[in-house]
Amino acid sequence: MPVDRRMLFGVDWVLVGASLLLCLIGVATIASATQTGRFHGLHAKQLYLVGAGLVLLLLSLAFDYRRLVDRAFFFYLITLVALAYLLFFGPRLAGARRWFLIGGFRLQPSELAKLAAALLLAKIFSEERRESLGLQDVLGPGAAVGLLALLIAAEPDLGTAFCLVPMFLAVAFLAGLRMKAVVGLVTVLAILGGLGWQYALKDYQKSRIYTFLDPTLDPRGAGYQKIQSEIAVGSGGSHQLGVIQRLAASFCGRKCIRPACSQSASSRQSDS
Image (cartoon, rainbow, N blue to C red):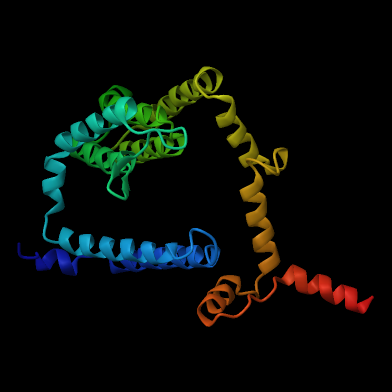
């Protein structure tokens, strides 16, 4: 299928470059963190996936995105069926039903749900011809996106489910939702959130939120990662190149340079 040159020249190359930069930072971080152990070499797999993503990006230039919007309801139904099937019949991994196992690859339908929700909202709101929308005009799209969010939250995957909420609010606002309706919608969501906190969330899920706000509540458990990340950033400071040093050490076979905190501690001992 020939590539539409107008779409090729209309690509936001700044966005593409920023995305590639984020991917490379992620690969460098993985390479730095997996120099030893059973995950050694995981960054190579990540590089292959980035390359596959670039190939898919080039192939997508052959399609007009408006064709996807025209089939938004079809993609929504497929995603809905996949999430429902996964919830009842999917394999349970680490206490959750989030992935389809296809060979050695894990497919997570909740990530596809983000795309399906975006296409559905674009389809519905693009057909609205009014300059402003009321609360009753967004109840249908809100219920459709809310159903996806509920199925994802039941896996459980609250983080991905919550990502659909600001997406819906942003698209509805840009489509012309009146400010009074926005306030009413946020109020309804706040009430539903309070009820969900009281009756739906489990203790470990509440604990994650508490420790996110204050990781010292569980420094060796749920708050461990956040505390260690703060220590790592504080130790590196503004002049340390920890990731680069560790990558250079992994490729050159040398020992990593000790972090700034270790160097400062040894210098204090020598001074004393």
